[in-house]
Image (cartoon, rainbow, N blue to C red; front, side, top):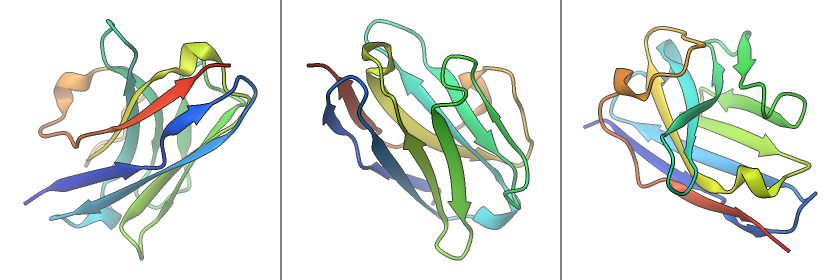
Length: 124
């Protein structure tokens, strides 16, 4: 059974940092590109970042470029999102997922099941 468990969210002031983690199971993680999506309050789920199966290629949404870094550890079946210089607009529930393909366009409909996500709130 494919499963994603996200963790590491919380309340952080503007300008702060957080590191999100995602544990994947039920499939051969090392052969899949991994994704972070987020869903701000009242809005659609949107692509944040993607990393290729081997970790050598990454892509980011313009809104987070230069502030967020995606990484992965295939030995641990995990993907991470290091977030810095956080802004109130980054407030959202953050989700991870995986696909065989590497896509840089935003389309949450490509994915099957999702985990519970982890809440990130940026506020003073």
